[in-house]
Image (cartoon, rainbow, N blue to C red; front, side):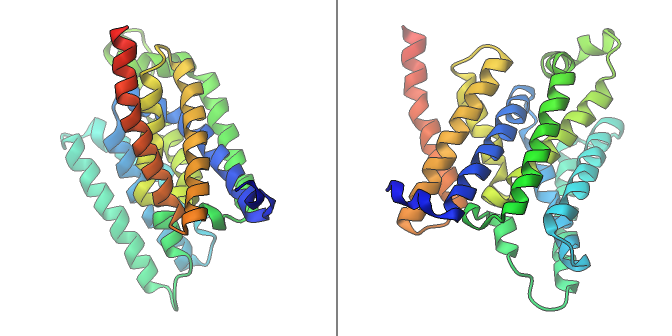
Length: 269
């Protein structure tokens, strides 16, 4: 089984899985603790508009989806906080508009859109080495921002009202967190695709919450769980000749189910 590590594409895939796990492990904890899974899913799916725009303009879709996803995150955050539209309604509308724009741009692009399914469902085995550098840069940006605003993010994650009373710029911090979620989504697109990205963002963080009571501990465990699940899913997808993105998510789902009885045993003891 270990002989497959001699292949260059497998080595690249493992590095990509590690980079994605770092981003997901850090930001996913905030998503789970703050209970913003739905808005994160909305950002992920609306970002398809950026992929379509990239095809239309002849750019690398990863480069076009980066500003598009950040813009989507800001708009979604402002609409949900500053308008009378219910948050779930705003998310649904922007989700649909983003997907519709992506489909329209792809339809307007002459010829066939290559690798489109990769961006929707992921394929970690086909990630080009250049994308690794972009993923690493985005990881560094996420780490730096979380380090600089760690205390503020903790405050708004657990008690927004107290944060406002304490004169923290809650709205700006929330928008910054949503932008970091957008960056994380860009990191994960080539791993599991936009359709499955929310699972990679939430499952490892949800499991880590059962074994740690503080955010730093949760982040470390979430990174570890994400790395193990991603590499295991990667190996299984190669050996069984099945899609890598869906295999990784199924492995994570099985891991989540298996951790439930373990959690109960720890609670009982």
